[in-house]
Image (tube, rainbow, N blue to C red; front, side):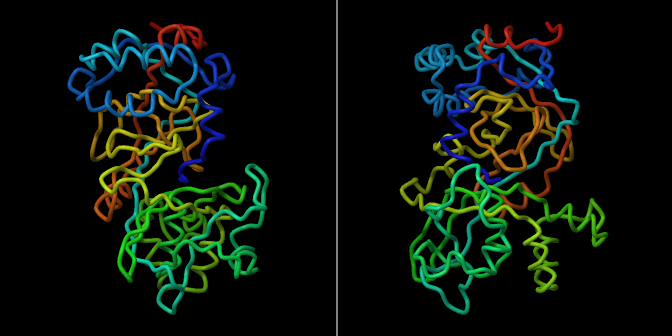
Length: 346
């Protein structure tokens, strides 16, 4: 994902009124007692994350809540007094996945070892307008000799997955650290290469993971290159090394996201900055209050979320194992919640 789609989507999300939800999305209110595990969560952790981005929400009801939050001491009481749980559904099953911030090795200088560049956004690329495809970019030389390279990586799979994640830390072979974040994209829809391997009957659905894809591309360099190019979407980056090392990468709200408390959502349905209660099932169940602070090309739908697991290889392993069912419930300001209802609730 990329995850962060930038200021344009942020503006869309925070300006969205409850009545602007798609007619295909059903909305009903719940009670906090309906949320499984609500009483056991660490509400203060979510509260701190919420306050980190609530000042960016410009609608009056959100701004009022943000002002109250700055003076509130009891986190659970704050959420229960000023919000209403809202269940949004669109006919699709809930799906939780995970993402992380990769930490890779790279160089400021191209060499035989470091041959795969991360590019800044070319000036002719316009948001929302399709430009060249991944294959055309990589084989046509459109970005060569234009001084758009930020850093060079060791292999194409690292580059591909960094584009999927949308941000990362690059430890330079010559010393130092470069941090990159989402800078833009070429305007083409994201295509899953894991799904393509399944379609080709190379693997069964339960066999596909990031590591399996990585190994397959390494063992099949020609077909592997074609597989990566199956995804027409191509992400550009910007350097964000001014973000402190102890903070998470920048999300779609241009603020650092938080391990285990930030999620990526579909901003056309869930307002960025909103608290979201998740009930993720699977091998590692999670009942937790999160904050919608990011977006992703593959994150579409009312019951779709990507959980941020942190930075580095272990976070990547955890994130890569997540593909679970469950339920997500958005907390909206009370009046906004009731005005968005499309079916009887509580």
